[in-house]
Each structure stands twice: as C-alpha cells, then as structure tokens.
Length: 225
Image (cartoon, rainbow, N blue to C red; front, top):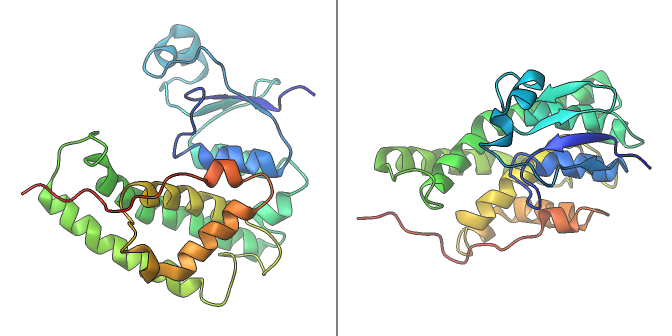
C-alpha cells in the first residue's frame, strides 16, 4: 500500500508538534512517509523545498496528488478526516466539531505556549528569564486546574466514555508528554490525578503506546539563583 502522503520532519524522531499527526494517521490506518535525508535548517532552505513551501516551515505535508499543507494542527486535522476514525477524531456533529476545535485552539494558545516557556531554558534552547518563568509557572497551574476540573468524571475531553480519543485528546496528550518529560515532576503529578489518568488512558489506546510513552521527570530542574 502506497503512503498516504509525505511528512517533512526530523527523521527517526517525533517532534512535539508532529506527535498528534502521527497519532491521527495511526488511528486512521494511514502510512506517512518521512524522507530519511531530511535535515532541518538545510533541506527546508533549498530552492526545491521553498518552491513547494515558500516560508520553509516544518512540519510540512504533501500528498501524491500534490496537495500541500503547513502548520501542524492543519496537517493533523486533514489526516484525521481521511479515514474510518474521522467522526471519532473530528466529531460527528457540528457541535462536537466545534468543541474539538475549541480545545485544540485553547491548548495551542495557552498550555503549549506555557509549556514551551518552562521547557526551553531547561532544554538549553533559550536563556533563563526569571520574569517569564514566574508568569509561566502561574499560568500552568491555571491551565492544569481547568483541564483537571473538565476531566472529572469523564475519560476524554469531548467524546463519550468508551468512544476513544478525539484529535483534541491527541493534541493535548502531546503537550502533556512534553510537560511530564521536563516540568510536571513526581511531586506535582498527583495534584492532577484526572489528567494523569487521561494521559495513561491515551497511551493504552491501540496503536498509541509507542507515541505517548516516554520518561517522566522525577524532579524538575530548579531555577538558577
């Protein structure tokens, strides 16, 4: 069976923004080809790549028919709508589709940006900024409290119990993966039992164990004095 499309991203590694894409493809039974010779910062600056994707942004996606997309959420949404799990992933009604988009956008605008601030200096991507760290730590508690409350008495963010994860769940799970890896440590995790149970449930979904399994930080890196 030929690949459904080509995803231009780091080969052999799942980037935080591609996790939901691979997860949606897995649930829909779609194969994505990742070029083994793709080198971020080089391949995406070549004339050939820029002719297809003028800003050189990655991840980028292309079908055999020549349909092209950038922006990870747009790619994930397109792939989610292409298989047998479409209604589960995107919603079977207008209301469910709207709720799905609401959670994806909220996560992208709030939890994901906060997670990046808290993770960037700890992973030596950016310099430490005490003001940003303090604000992000406060925001994180606010967002996690919101998620924890929403998940009380339910398995998924949108779908009914037993219905399986939506694209919103896959998206949120990807952000939680990063937070558990760098910031939400062993002391903090029990404060958000509903979120942790959700994350473990997501991992147990057929086909998703490998994508959502990773080390969880025991004690997060302390701020420099």
